Image (cartoon, helix red, strand yellow):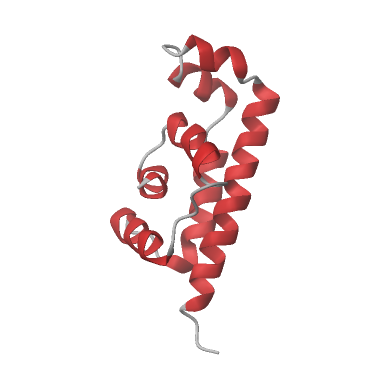
Length: 106
C-alpha cells in the first residue's frame, strides 16, 4: 500500500516508511500490480514515476512535512534524507523494473 501511496501523493512519511519496510518486507507481484493499478501507473513507467516523485521531495519539503515529529527531525538531516530517498529509489527501481520485464515477451 505504501507504494501506491508514494505514487499517488507527495508525502515525506511514505519515504520514511518505505525505507524501513523495503529491506524486510519486499512486496510481491500481486501487491505491485495492485499498487500500480490503484495509482494508475503503467508498469513500464513505474520506475521513472518513483524517481520523479522522490526527486520532487526536497529536504525543506521533508522538514515542513515533519514539523510535528521532533524526534524524527532530530535524527534525519539533509544528508540522511538524501540517502534515504536514494535507498528507496534503488529498492523500488529494482522491484518495478523486474516486474515490468515480466510482462514483456521474450
